[in-house]
Length: 152
Image (cartoon, rainbow, N blue to C red; front, side):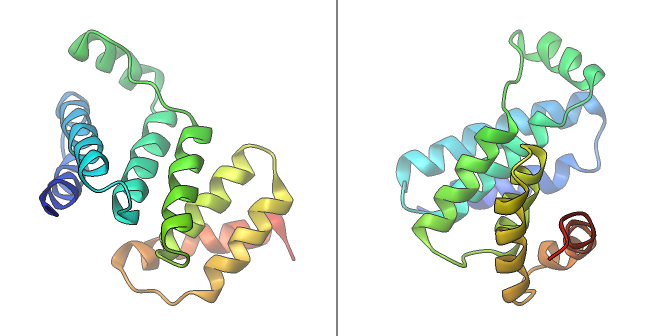
């Protein structure tokens, strides 16, 4: 029952070290497994967090990556920062404080959408949580940048 989210995470980790073409193919597989995980366990915050990560990554693809994806998949990958935000918020709704990384991404999404007061609020909430995962530690730099940009 928990297999799809774990497999999706593995796909994502492997994709970080591959060519654009392989990353896109792995990303497509990742998305299929995340969708399957949400269908099987709609109340699983990790699945919604992973969907948020996928949407966030896709929304930041370069022009070349988008063109390569369209050629490989015969349809464009499409996701927005708003899509990512909704998935991160769903994970938080299902389990408040589920993930420090999730709160950092919520803050980043709000910042990119020009909603600085909401971004500041979620940045402060993220600061309240301890670093639990390697991703939490890796996002510390992003959190510090948000603090500088957003202030108190």
